[in-house]
Image: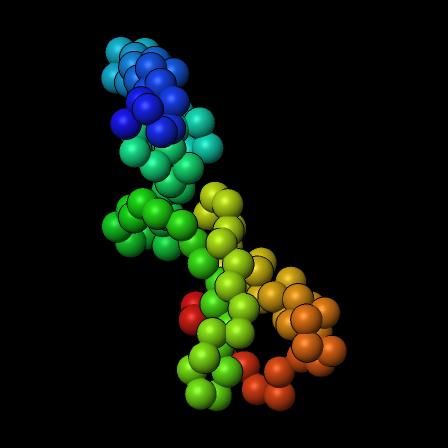
Length: 107
């Protein structure tokens, strides 16, 4: 692991620090400061409503009628889906010169 990605020691130090803060000092460590993976330190903490916590990346996908993926944005952090709808439509207008005739979204 250390050969390709560099030394894991700074991540280990960060994990020890966040554990000391949370467990011994009773501090709430903000999600953006937490390291949740030694192997993929860029992993985000994703929580939707009050559902189970997931780890990974939030994606915004745009697909055409044929289900071909036309656009993909990998978000940083855990932005609200509702905050991303208009920017994604504006992005489609930039890329294709128009917004889609029809849309659907979750949430």
